[in-house]
Length: 457
Image 1 (cartoon, rainbow, N blue to C red):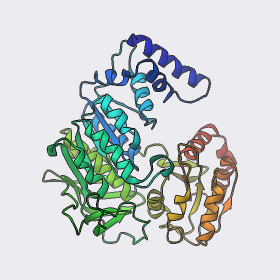
Image 2: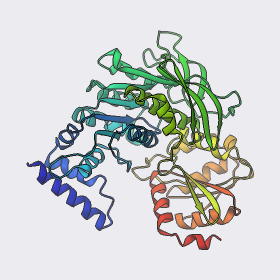
Image 3: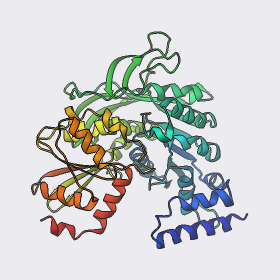
Image 4: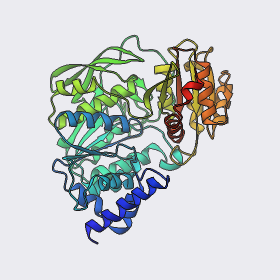
């Protein structure tokens, strides 16, 4: 089938989807293309002169992809990316279709795509990436992915189908072990953190998702644990241990809700970084972006300058000002992620105002039992004002009840947000912690109801 015809049909489908209000056209073109021309994405990607980069892992894909895009653009690249977060194969294909002229010409010089963990193997064989970044592996959507070993194996299949440069989180045992899928050892690069500030809060961790040696299944010994199972480890039985990072945070001088200051060592050169996104998990996202940039030959000083001007991706530490109050929108989707968000923002405040918006649609994951794995008792102050909403708001209320935390459940998203803002004193701060589909619904509501600011005064 002629390329121009497939592109015309899929572009028309995307426009129709938007006009009819049935979506943003971020996945439908790719779905149609898979039927009309299954090799379309690969043929379009081959026209990118500087190749393709892929970012995968459980937490941080959207933020890290955004950081990398900013770094590449600052270095002169024209970046094609799936910035909407549609990260299945059809979403990646749709991004390529959207950027292509009917002739198939692309104005971009490089492709950068966040890719769902289970979809990586379906995308790498076709797009043949030059670089793959793997951030972390946590228990997430067990109804869809299965156990972590299964997810790791799926990513491994994707890696094995390429000769891409591979950037792995040295502090995640399962991610570090993915090096065995690389066709050559010289393709593998590691990034990691040496230590956190000595005054970092001692917060009870969620149950470790990966505390077994990927080689012999013995229980790993950790000398340092930063969060979840992320840290420094070794196997007491075989020779598996944390690899030495090529790019490493050597010192963290400050870390609070406004961001962090740290030093990164790259090829023997140390560079100070002022990073405005809060949380240890976001520091790892910045480190992954720095590692990839080093592999692309971008100087650390330029990377640090770009990181210092970072703006959060939508729904990820997104800051809004409404009716004289500040709201943070903080996406949560698994125990480690929610623990980190609560530790970074909520637990540090006196009488914080918090809204949990929990849903269980397909994009969220149907299983919300992970809520019970978060140490709410240690992370939410006793004087907090807490509301819950969403399809599974009652489950969140019950979890909080057993933690000894009083919460009021509100059925409607809009009513819940209105009430949260009314509860916050003018000049104060509140936190909305939604799962993915709840986050999309709340953002859409906030965008459409600008007049609500009058209600909140």
